[in-house]
Image (cartoon, rainbow, N blue to C red; front, side):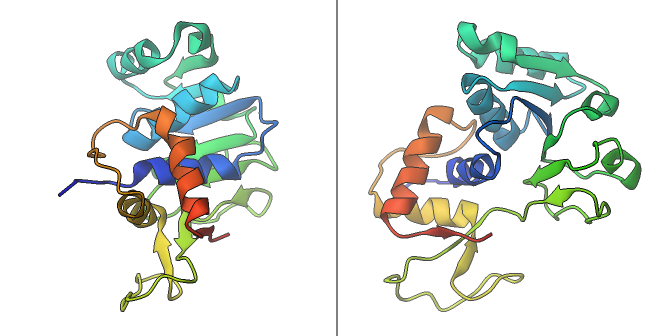
Length: 197
């Protein structure tokens, strides 16, 4: 038996909602498993990642995990106001009305926060929590997830199914190996999972 949390596919789904030409991202929940994995992935892609965290120690640990040539792309922030000029917000924690209003007009909130944010800004974009529709040939699923259509599952659950379909033998717990994000996405696409938009 393998223990699988499905977070690499969740991270992939969030990353896929971020336009490829984004140069700067403001990440909240930056030192969580998902926040860390997404931050490292984006930094390697050349994105300046402003990581909001009060913990200097946890931030320093993530910088240490980043290849040296990309470390300059990780920026520590302790103040929500540092997101005021950033149009791409990756959100892994609750945001109050006041905090949401720190984002500039037209900003996109790419979220992995549960429950999802209240959509308080008409002048911003809110992505849905990452989810996938099961492959058309999937059979034997007799349940549905509370807030979703039949055959739709949260990305982490889809990630566990992909892990089983690929017959991967590694456990998937703890920090996300950002090198496995694309591999997991490619496997999900190969098996016919479709992202719910």
